[in-house]
Length: 367
Image 1: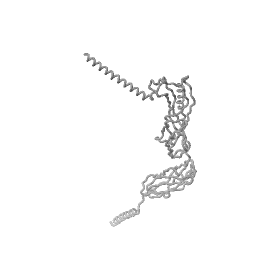
Image 2: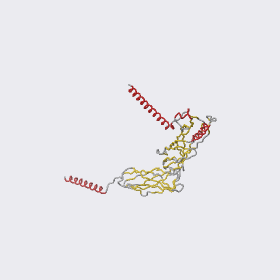
Image 3: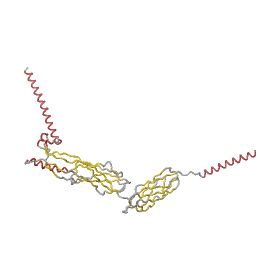
C-alpha cells in the first residue's frame, strides 16, 4: 500500500514538472515574439512625452525639363522635375525639462526629429490633360518618388508619354499634376516606461498626415502652317484620263514658302504629273491645283482615296512636310458603245430582214 502511494506521488510530481516546463517555454516564446516585434509597437501617450511642436510642411513645385514648346502631331517623353521648397517656420515649447539632464537630451533629440517634418514621403504623381488635343499615355501617367527632401533634387525626373493631336490649335495648354504624399506631423519621445511593452531601442514615435496638391504644368504648342483639302471637283472614268481639281487651304498660323503638292496613286490609277508647284501660301489662303489621272478600263467603280502631302519651307528656311491629306475621287463606269463588229452584224441583220420582206412583197404581186 505504501509503495502504491509513493508511485502515485512520483507521477504527480512528474506531471507538475511537465506542466511547468510547458508554461516556461510559452513565456520564453512570447517574450521572444515581443522582442522581435518591438519596432512594430507604437507606444501611446502614456509612454511618451512631447517637448516641442514643430511648424512647417513640404511645399512642392514642378517644372518641365528642357523646352516646353512642342509641335502638332508630336509624341514626346515629357520630363518633369519635382522640387520641395518646404521650410521650418518655428517650434513651440510644450514640456519643461527642469534640471533633468536626460530629459534635456531627449528634448534636443526631439528638435532634431521635428526638423524632418518638411520631407515629403511616398509621393505619387499623376499627369492629366483636360484638352481633347493632348493625350497622356495611360501606362506612364502615374509616377512615384520614395521621398523628397527640401533643397535636394530627385535622382530621376518624372517621365510621361504625351501625344499632341495634328488638329491642336497653337497656344498655351495647362496640364494637371495631382500629387499625393505623407509628411511627419508629430514627434513624441518615449519614456523609460516603454520597457513594460518589451521595447528597449525605440526612443521616439512619429505620426504622419496625408496631403494632396495639384501642380500646373504649362506647355506651348507652336504656330505653324497646317493644310487641309477644302474641295475636290471632277471624277474618274474607266479607260479615260480625267482632270481633277483639288483646293488646298492653309488653316495654320504661319506662311508656307515655296510649297509643292504631291499626290500618290496606285493601280488601277495613274497620275500623269504627280508633283505640282503650289507656291507661297499664307494663313487662310486657298489654292487650286489640277491633276490629270488615268483610270484603267478594268478599274472597279467606287470612290478612291489618294494620298497627298505638301512640302514647304518654314520661317527658318527649313524643309517641312505636312501630314497626309486624303483626296477622295469617285470613279464612274464608262459609257457602253457598240463595237465595229456589232455594228456590222446589226447591218447584216437589217439587210437580211429587208430582203426577206421585199421578197415576200414580190411574191404577193405575182399571186
